[in-house]
Amino acid sequence: MTLLASAFLGFDGAALVAFGIWSGHPLLALIGAALFVSSGLVLIYWRWQQRQLDEIAAARRALRDEAESMRELLRGG
Image 1: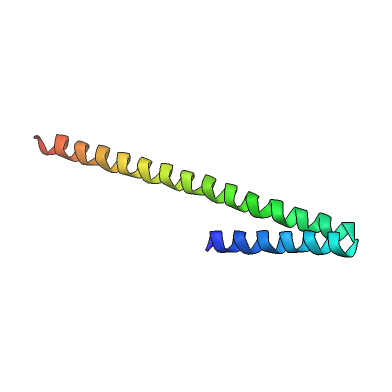
Image 2 (image 1 turned 90 degrees about the vertical axis):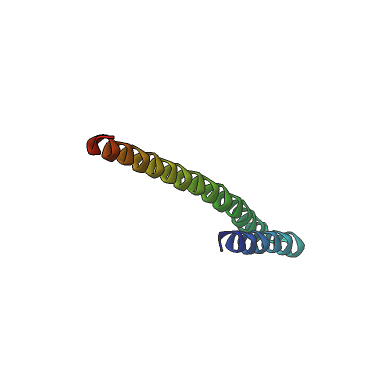
């Protein structure tokens, strides 16, 4: 879903830049450039968030393994 939203935002930005240049309205081109750049920022943030979620999952697995080894130790063997 994030990729679709980013692609849509990038397309809108590129179209607005082209229309702004074609019509001679530099403000539209500037707004379009901002939208295009923001689509890249969405992707960068999404990748960062995915890495954070992977780190959380790894920490949970490590905690689960540690708890299991403590249970085995308390059981006596």
